[in-house]
Image 1 (cartoon, helix red, strand yellow):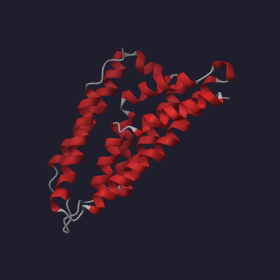
Image 2: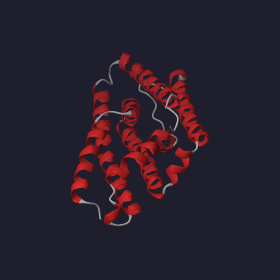
Image 3: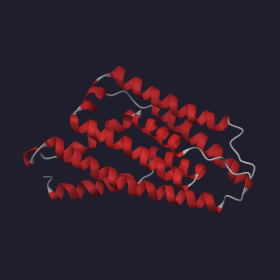
Image 4: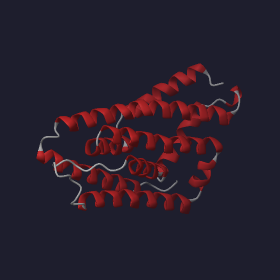
Length: 210
């Protein structure tokens, strides 16, 4: 059982981290603005599915294997970066992504889900975050460490679903209001593409495991 006082501080710290827009929020915002509210919510689900698996890996000690190997860390890092940059370039270069009415064509929700999942599961910074953050609030004297870590991971992911969904809702609502503006419609494509490329470059520049 987790110490109630530690759980309280954990939730405050988690909320503070989640309210500050990070890479996941930028990705979700770009998806929501360019593909609509449902795409944003599906992206949230994809991101948080990957986060949950990363939290489980941290609890079971699997993250330590990744973080202890410079080669494994770099392979995962560059795969994730390359995939994000590929998505960005593809978004920028695609010319036939508008329907006859001038609206952006909608990608399938299944495709959106798997893209979001792959993007986050191949981000070693996520594994590093859970590996470093969760254990700070675990007390070995209060029971099974693995179960405490898993519980904290579930709480964090649950909170992230709420906060990330709010970002998706706001971004999609703003996009809907400006949907009639032709310049905005074209800008959606470039915004999403540049966000993906920027996130890819940021991931590639992530420091070594040290």
